[in-house]
Amino acid sequence: MSNRLGVGFIGSGFNTRFHILGWRGVRDADVRGVWSPNAKHAASAAKLARDIGVGDARAHRSITEMVADHAIDAIWLCGPNHTRIANVEEIVAAVKSGNGTLKGIACEKPLGRNVAEAKQIIGLVKSIGVPTGYLENQLFAPHIEAGKKLLWARGVATTGRPYLARAAEEHSGPHAPWFWNGKLQGGGVLNDMLCHSALVVRHLLTKPGDPLSSVKPVRITGHIASLKWSRPEYVKKLKSTMKVDYAKAPSEDFASAMIEFETPDGTIAIGEATTSWSFVGAGLRLSAELLGPEYSMKWNSLDSGLQLFFSREVTGRAGEDLVEKQNAEQGVMPVVPEEYLAYGYTNEDRHFVRAFLGEEKALLTFDDGLEVVKILMAAYQSAEQGKTLAFPPKGLDAFVPQVAKGTWRPQQ
Image 1 (cartoon, rainbow, N blue to C red):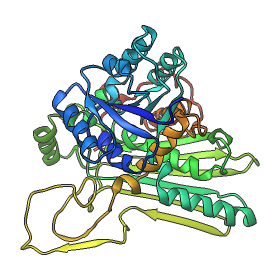
Image 2 (cartoon, rainbow, N blue to C red):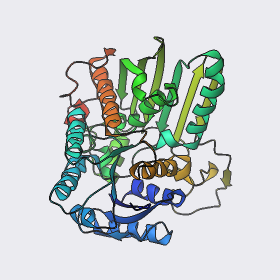
Image 3 (cartoon, rainbow, N blue to C red):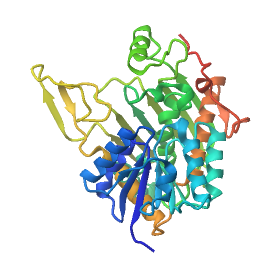
Image 4 (cartoon, helix red, strand yellow):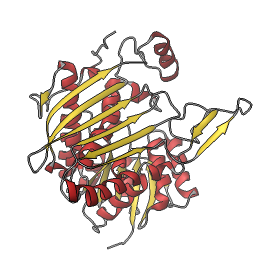
């Protein structure tokens, strides 16, 4: 058995590039291929991998060709949400037809746009018996890993389980037009980013070594709103820059979920998850807290320890060289060096490489991705009904959010 894993990426956007940059800290694996419907973008991403020395990557003409490439042992699914099923279907068809074999398939969040899609993806991959990994980078962020380990080893061991976890992800809006389109993406910011925060709070409340299922969601209260992007001036801006019309089919730009969990000892713990596309600040802000009887932890990604200042005399083009989703180029600006490491991409990819090589057990599989989708859909159901729901609520498997249907209208 080879002790190195050749990896191919489906998708060539900013997410794939974060993985490729993070690959500089991954051993026993090489980036060997990229496929995208945009051949130019695929070639650019493959060149990035070659330029930084993380693999002799090339752009592939199709997913089938990538599966058939003997240099590729595993696939990282990083394409848009609305292409997920078609991409998985092509992988499965290629394997079943004998074009190639795979040691693993890893999938970016969310696994599916709704429960039915997530279950379909699981069924497809199970039909070829390939191990899976659910890519949730924030669980592998160094601050989350270190904070959880220390609190459980010292605080929980002496004073009892944590009872409250909070997590938030906030920025000014997505990179690409399809994220803003409720039908394509499967919703708004809740579907796009609450998948991170909901899993982070459950992870923090779970004893190290225990499965996430040991902390069971029993009630969920969800709320969604359009705070910024449905205002006339921003509708106009969004239509101009992203070619979507929020006057006709808006998506939520703010979402929250309060998740009540039952712990193994019968106590109740609360997870508060918040996400926003209407955040005004330096750029992407990730934060998390964990509180227990005699301890607490907190993390804010913009408290990076490095700040730069640019006066009004310093001018230049807009960019994202200081922090992801950067909103300004003047004044006091926090800098997040090696964002891919700070956000958990390197640790995540190192883990799943080792899992697919059989060197450790995968911490997250597609089954965990399905659980996240169930929580997201329950939060949407709660928001639409305006009340707290027992988990899992009725009709969850067939539920599609109003935002994804294009029928949701925010309260004015």
